[in-house]
Length: 115
Length: 114
Image 1 (cartoon, chains in turn brown, blue):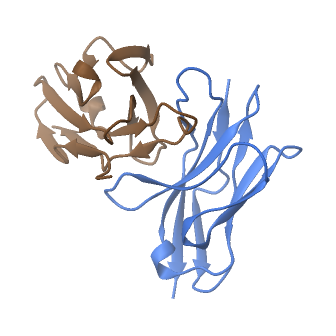
Image 2 (cartoon, rainbow over the protein chains, first blue to last red):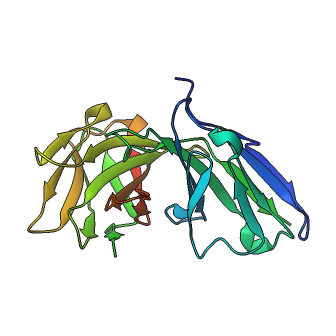
């Protein structure tokens, strides 16, 4: 296992710009999650994919946010018209679809700074 | 709805001392409980988990936690702290179901003094 990878690790952008993050889950993990972590807080759930289907979205995921998982492999999270409040660490996690489906393995995160 | 409360946002111990990080949960269904550790600018690493069965669970790096249903608690302990244990620790709960999404506490930052 190479683990969950995320790219980029850091992103600095100006307010109003669009950004896109990528997550590559552990191979053969069919469940994929995105979380957001702000300073001093625990991660908060954003959205969940099972294979290519997006099955749940948090109210935190405003219309400016969109996530995809084409072909059920890697996933992208796009934020349009970024705002300073979007500054956070964006974490991706994956889990297997079997009896261990509750075990989530996290990537290193993408730290977004909106100036 | 599920929730997690971590008492003490900062805990400081001396090297070699007992580590005790507190976690209380609320869940309307039998919970699955987790402790994760996060080092600066890194993702989360699973320390240990409770699903069913034995209420005392052992994890990596010498940590263990005990599920106490009557107290709705899942405190994390380690008999002897090492400098390398300094990190932020998060307790999380999931009720399973279709998504198994995790609900995290606000974290406890552990400092280890030499």
